Length: 548
View 1 (tube, rainbow, N blue to C red):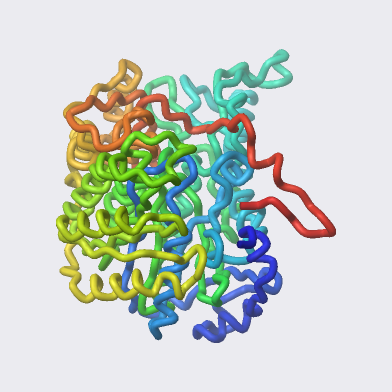
View 2: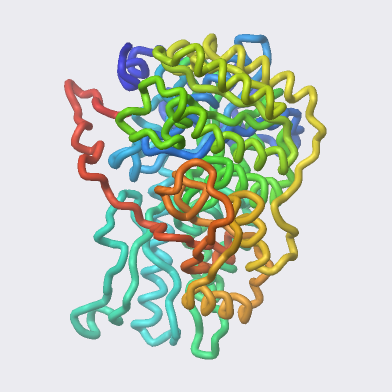
């Protein structure tokens, strides 16, 4: 089989203006970025008519789960069945593109294109967020240097959209008064920037301005919050972010429209594409398919408790992606061996599937388990997984979307259409909106992760007091946690129960409207692996090679 990039580069794309007109967009509603990309601003009078479908997964593994590939294949499969389906996905970060996981444009014959552009600079959204974030940091430090503000603490960090562990903890401003004020600080990856969340959650220009105004960037000597609005930086940030707020329209290999916009990670941020992109998909399609990062414990929980709660969205169905490989891994098989048949490991790892199904049932939407199919998957192991789904009372279908595109996902599409027809329209949340922060953490830890208790570090207790003093103690929470386990320990596979969830820090994101809760050894600036994907990427005869 050809590589992802070879498949992508051999595909003839529709011109973006032809695609836009085919799906009913007027010339005033889109701005072409070359021949194959466009920024979209839909007429606000258009009604949202579509049914929302979320794609999530069982607990992750280093190679990824295949959610994006499944999302794309599902939409292509639906369109093959005569339904109007549109996709809303996140934009890839350069961190995993040049790191370990690779890009996030799907795979095989279920990709969004042009994959090189989407995985690299695309339309410049991430650059705009990075520039705006770092302009704000520079304005804060300049105001301190000029004696215009006197802060007890600066809480705003700089960001960069690459994995760079060297920048996690730094001292800036060294070299005397001419270079600024020496400060202990550090960098986060751009997808963890609060501005990324602000971009994804803002639903209008006025809302974006209000969120930027209330960004808490430091603490004054009297203990009160110092905001972006007080600094006077909101206008400049608005200017940098203006184009980036518009969803990007591209297409799949089979010509299905795809809105690719925003890209917060789910292990360190809220893991969902922009509300604007999701609403655009709901407006153009009868079915809007979106995905949330990593497993149901991370992406799906935040999709429900943060994005859906804020935007008033209710999904009609949830697709839970898994594979025999993933379940064998959670049954204790070493990563290099997960492609080999192992019935006992599969039986042992099935508890991870059970836990995610239970989580999703508690939230309410109908569930379809989609098994990513590999050519050497044994029939008896597939039969075991099918039987377990029947026992759990959820639909089951096999996806061959990677190898066959939409044709390989028609069974999944049929199961999803059945699920949508059975939808009750009910969405439950993991916690009450007005509950205190610790109660919210405990609710997610116990109801979603299976924890028995939560322990706050001394630093987290100090953070909590500060957040309470500032009056933000009723915000939603966004838990930063390893994607490889339901616990905070990436080595605790399967479905442990009764464990303690160790909370390290609480980070106020007043503009985004939530509190980030870091657990275990999670870092908001990832590092590169021993053999980064960057070493395989090149340009030959004017074409990019090696992207995956």
